Length: 162
Ligand code: ADP
Image (cartoon, rainbow, N blue to C red; front, side, top):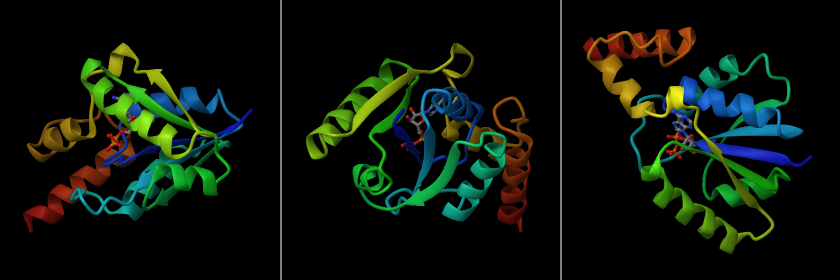
């Protein structure tokens, strides 16, 4: 079974992401969750914080590794001997972007295939943006994220208030 990479911003990781990670970890020998160091977007959490939260969430999945990366995802995949890229598809709105990304990646590196996992209906509305917004306005986000992420969001709130 090949090695797969699941790339994303994970700012922060949600239960939707974790559902994909759990399912993908059963499909491959090894799954590398790759946190993008994205200088274009201004993330709420630092790369180290995003990696740390994911590691805590994935600690019971022995074949899941969390790493950060900069640059093109296909280069990261190749350097890590991965031949599959996993992405989650929530709704038609994701489709246009995701198909373009998958086709570009295939043109850049034909040896790497993108596999789409359909998001569980339970999490199809969920995004990191929604979680950040809800937490910012003081809503309970325990339905959307794990307790360590919820605590980290509260801590960010406190930092921003002082
Ligand atoms: P990106 O900035 O690359 O879209 P995200 O962290 O937002 O990074 O998402 C990473 C991957 O997880 C993407 O494939 C995205 O479609 C998927 N994803 C995001 N939210 C969910 C969710 N609620 N359920 C399943 N997959 C999701």
